[in-house]
Length: 75
Image (cartoon, rainbow, N blue to C red; front, side, top):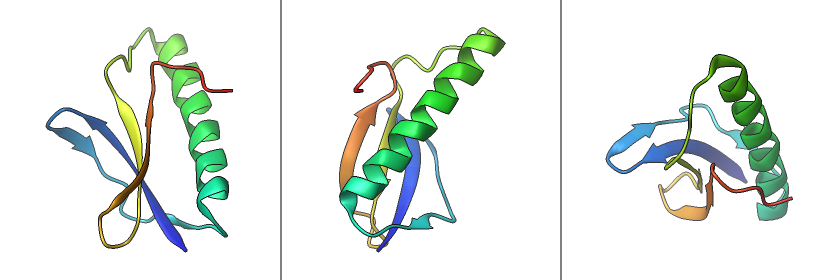
């Protein structure tokens, strides 16, 4: 299944126009958690904050399958 990973903060969205093929939602979540770790590391180095942002895992129809806040550590 193809999933897209949009960064969202209220009305502001940074869309993922390419997405990736994953075998299931668990694989998509694993990919998202790794992406969040990378985003946090870059933010720390740049002195930026992603507070209030979330990463939405979205299917091709636009339905949100899972939403993960960037401010929380889930693993």
